[in-house]
Image (cartoon, rainbow, N blue to C red; front, top):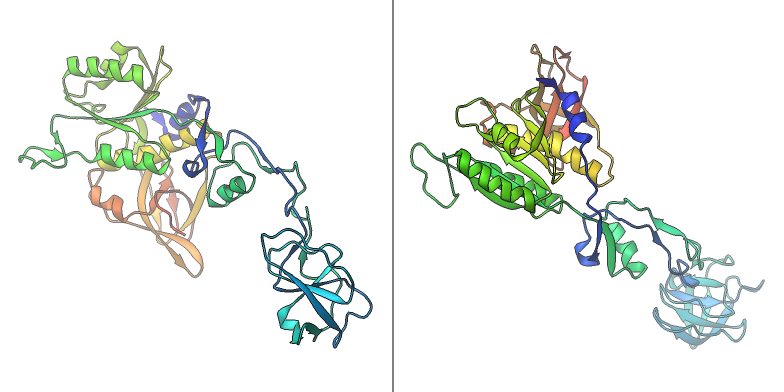
Length: 398
């Protein structure tokens, strides 16, 4: 067995580059930019009014009680008008182009209408209430770096520069495979010796959160079936995530099956709890990473977050986040294993604080629904209350 930190480092040494592709902007959310984005025009592209009011040409007479005759109105989205003289004004709406020869906008709250004129009620500062052309960024400026994750704000930028199709990093084609003769489909009534499949559906849902639509397979614990089906799957998919079949049971055939199929073992078994029997390797010919997680639900869930998600981040050129949180109660690890302990997070006196969730072990699927994530306790470590410890989030907590 190897330490957790060594196992994670070995996993991160086997990332791949899957190239890039163009997608419609409506499908770009959650993806990673494979190109830099530049301004195709000045932002803003014209001097624009930031208030509803009147546009005037500033002179020394622009002070309270000065009257301006109304010469027109400029809604947002209309072509630029021209102000002919300093004694007139043009009404402008927020977002409209400031008329030619005008240099100041006075909002309606600071003027009074009288017949066909507006009269100033407040002092005026030249240039007020105008968002000047290129004051945000000039044309040609870099707006988004290559490698930027695309969220709502980035979609707004992409739409503004006319990127209806966006170059993004390709996501790997992934197969999620469950093994075990005791598993039946979720719409079946299990016999006393059977259970419904859950891990595969959990993994597929986790991948959906990363924008990946994985395909599900279930393989019986029979060596011939495993060899035949896995050989086919390895040729069609770029990453395999498996659940079950890697412990020390007499029907855990995956390690020897991988060896027969040319999947080179990087490591098997890690000094951690849960998830100790984790097997990781890579197909020599297909260059396909294989993550074979133990079949217990919590083990599969923990190993996905501690190994696969950092691997995916690095593969896509993204940083691997690191979080620390405070403990509500003291924690002690008397073992030689790295412990991943499910916790619930709460803001206590303005501090993000973790409290252990009661669990019956690595088969306790219900505890996953209660946990916000896992704290990490190093071997032989003791932590007092209010100590900082590493935290792996599995839910959005703020």
